[in-house]
Image (tube, rainbow, N blue to C red; front, top):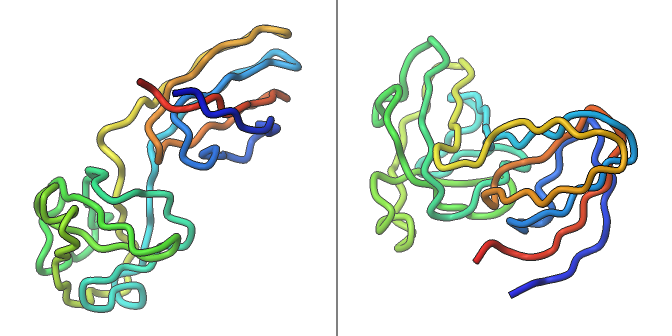
Length: 165
């Protein structure tokens, strides 16, 4: 199914194109287009409240697999540094983590103990991350995961043309 969307300028600021997974990119000027995995950073002391983690504009969707990192600090007691978890997206700014994809679909999050005030991260693991170099007037189609972001170092336009089959 092809869902047409409006054109968006792609500059140094990343965009996820409203969760579309197929984007048409036209290079107004030469430059690179980078697809990056979603990364969420949070302070374990102030952003953890039971099973809920607050990460402003996190970009993850329920079922995304992520890798947890304690950022070199103290690991949150219920999590394991470097281990994969699954996201339950509660809204644009809050999420929960769970051990299995099925638990994510059921909405069963892990109750977490507040950690110390260090920064921790979760990084999407199933991603289409990479970089493409375009010359002026090139047009390409990029397939990405819903939580991946797209950024460019030159002026380009991107149009959401739907979702991958």
